[in-house]
Length: 286
Image (cartoon, rainbow, N blue to C red; front, side):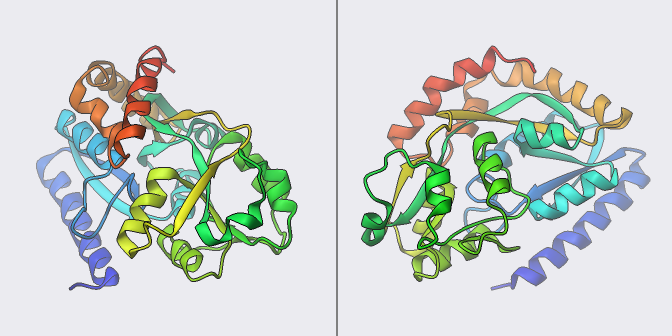
């Protein structure tokens, strides 16, 4: 079994080889910043490449053979830093508000997702009272409950705004850890709750053997579904790439195979919800 360090070192070597190949072939290099963000993007393990962003990116790469595609794993924070630095970079999945805040070139909606939830252990349910949905101001003000969020990650506009207002509170941890690591802390009792997508929590629980231990509740003020977009650096280069991607999405979004990327890893009942919301996305061109 290779270590994660070896895995990323190998990817770096492959990225360098691709970059060299692009010069040799005369193709322009197109760098994709991807996240270790299962089940949206799965970069390692037996299910590698089976996430929703994975399927979308694989299709975009297949439709853009004129580029030498360089796929680079990075954290939420590093992706943000690279965009701020002005590096020519694209990402297959980002919410619109943080992309706008970074002045990125943004595609039309690319994938449909269900809402984020408050995830906690079943044996701690009484600590959260009867609130359903849960109001974030009430939750974040409760100093007896300790939660955590990933720095640089956007959850939803109302969630991001609440996190900013309560940033620095000792009961809301913001640490540069992967979601998988925070989930382990939740299972170990070191955290009382996390903010996760329902299928994200289910995937992590399945990986750690904790499927029967967790539950979730909706968050007040959060829409039942939301979209992610493809985005590139907001310069002339990025605008040109997004124009090409929009043309691809116009034809791909109507296809059943492409729609299935939005449904990946959801249980059957949630898959039906995604399928019900998906046609709304087809009406959105920005």
